[in-house]
Image (cartoon, rainbow, N blue to C red; front, side):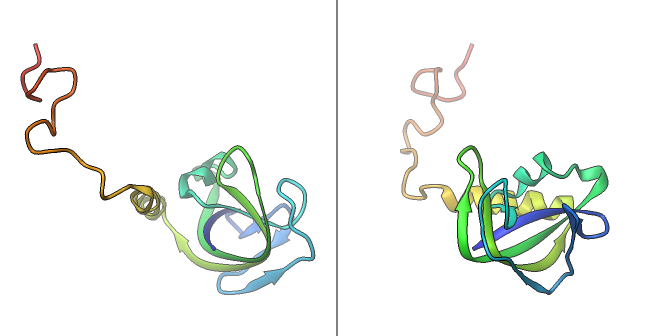
Length: 126
């Protein structure tokens, strides 16, 4: 599973030293307890690692997994550290993530497509 992870600037997280391009394994995965944690939604990383003191990487999670109930935080027994992402890169990934969830079949019709609380025509607000 593709995910995103924040680290301290020296690529450590909770006392564990990571390295770009390397794979790591642990025996158990339980969110907020043990295992390798990451976020499915890139901007959720900011809740754990602030942009001023952190670096962010795309990661690949596999093996046994656990998921947090309140956001996109996931935990796995296996992690591969991918490329480092800038803040702009994280934002782009967040847009891509959001667009992947959009129902592209849903849409507006030609006559009422831009109308909201303005009646039949979108630009006719008072």
